[in-house]
Length: 336
Image 1: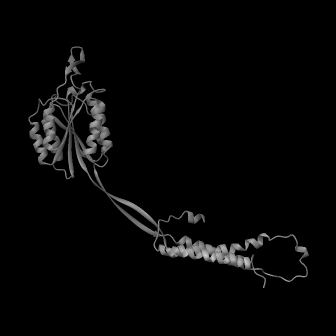
Image 2: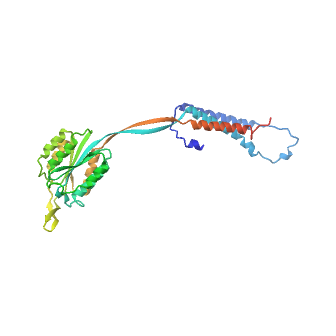
Image 3: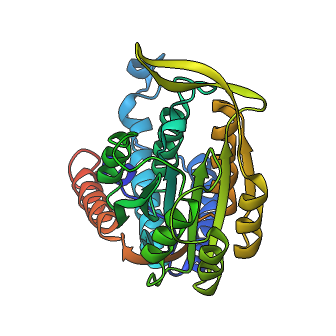
C-alpha cells in the first residue's frame, strides 16, 4: 500500500461509482454469517487424539482470501470512479506603477535633525520603499540648484538601490530648484504606458533656483496624468545646519524653512498628497502611507491540468488477484 500513499488524489471524474463501496457491507455481513453456520465434517475412528486442541493459525488465516477479494473490489470501484490529480499554476499579470523618486540633494540636506542627517535618512527609506515594491518600475531624479536623472525608469531594483546609495551632496550646483526637479521627473514619466504614474518629491527648503516655475511643472504633470506626492523634510523651529568656516564645516542652529504652501499646491494640482516629515520614524511612516495609496494591481488567473491516477490501483488489484489465486491453489488448497 506504500505506492498508494504516494499517489496524490484531488478529485474523482466519476465520483458516483464510490457509492458501490456501500454494497461491500452486506457482502461482509453475509460472509460472517456464512462462516458461523459452516461446520465442515470429517469421519474418523476417534477424536480422542485431538482433545484440547484449538483452531490453528491455518484455520484462522483462511479469512485472508476473503479480505483480498474485498480489497480487489475496493480497488476496482476506485478505478471506475477515475481518481485524478490536479496540477495548478497561476498566470500573473501585473498592472505596474511607474514611480520616480525626486530627491533634494542641496547642502541643507546634511542638517542633523535626522539621524545621521536628512539625506542619509531619505536614502534609507527610499531603499526600503524600492524593496517593498518588486512589481513596479522605478527611477531616481536628484536636484539642488539644477536637476539630474540619477537612474531612469527600470525594473532592475538592485541597480537602482546601488545608485541611491551613491547619492550625495555637492555633485550639483547648490540651491533648491524644485521646479527643475519636478520638470525633469515629469519628462521621465510622460511617455510611460503604465496604468499609474507617480512622483515622490522630497525637499527641505524653498524654491530659489532654476528657470522652471514649480506650479507650471505641476500643471504639466497633471496634463500627463502624473500624481505628485510631496514631502517636506525638517523639524519645526531650528536644526543644526552645516556651515563652512575657516576651521572647516561646523554645524550651527538655523531656522528650518520649508515652503509648505507650495508643496501643498503641487500635490493638490496633481491629485497627490503633501506630508511633513519631522523625524526618521515619521519619514518611514510617510513612505508606508504612499506605499498603501499606490498599490500595484495584480490579476491572477488560475489554470490547472488533471491527470488520471488509476494505473497503480489497477496494478495493485492485479497483484492481489494473482496472490489470491496462488494461495487458494497451494497453501489453502481444499481437499476434494
